[in-house]
Length: 500
Picture (tube, rainbow, N blue to C red):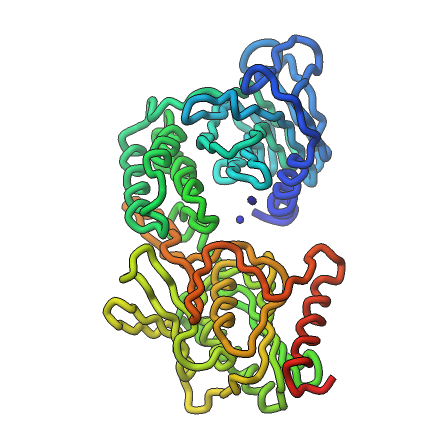
């Protein structure tokens, strides 16, 4: 699932995932005879909310007979506490949805909502979440009059339960009414501008996506155009484009609404190191943002190489590389930073949908490089080459630490180390964003960060999902962070000449 200031940021970043998790834990409901029961809150009995389930954390939840779109009343959630966050939801039987495509819709009105008020849909399978949309890209806040919102439900044969409802985060008052599920009507009332934009998005996805040869593009087209029903501007259509991108089901691709957008983060990254035990060098590499060969990238790589050089000079018999906080960014400065530990030559590759799309990752003399297999073209990505690069013996053990926060470029570094001799990984499964992204521009100035390749190690193993460690360490214990290090140190002592 399921990326402003002070307490509002905390409410949005922390409360929303917690609420979505909590609603998944609500007791199972028996299904009604219609997809959504009492969606208009029209029983005319005061506070009659059944069969809706309430998970309230600070909001007063009631039926408001004075503020409504139609019928007897509307659903009201109100709080004066910025830390509040509440869910009202009910289960829908997937067997009641016989057509290919449906829309969950409803009206929202707000008064001084400080963080967000949204609809949500979660489609569950037997043991996993198949689809989720909580309007994160089109939240309602402030004071607004009644507006209609829609979430398109893709038809998923493996669905066992569908949960629909509303989420309110932060202080203020929100009203909801006329919540219903109905068959989608393709592009009804949609402007030509929106249709052209969606056609461009779909063409880009179909031309470049890693799984383009096996995706049901007609279903994605239907879903995205259904989500665009009634939209008049490209800004409105971003949510419909995200429906198409989410249905790619790669867990990685995303839309960048403008030239900065989702990638507009401060340049730079953190890399640090020390001797964690006598003779055992410890290097922790966090996320890096920025151009591959910009000033910050070269400084990041230079800092990593110097750490390795200094620890090696002080006497190091084994290494721990900690990627557990590495959520991604740009992999090329990372490869240059730890290149002395990886060794020279090919350290991994991107594998595209076609054989001529393979690109190898290379480290040589302080430089990270990309080489196209189809024509042999080599592009220097991050260059901090000097005459005094640290050289690490390939027989020295390296323990790599990974976890569920290891993502994207962080997973690429884990893959690069997986091909190294005398190397073992410890921790638990990574986030599963093990694809190579490219940034593709659209004609209106927005962009798509699209998964166009899988990660491949030097042994030829392809990584298309989450990466499991060689040695699993339970993630749920209070001391899991230190336990992972301790297990890695024990392996190092068995594999090296390091003194205990």
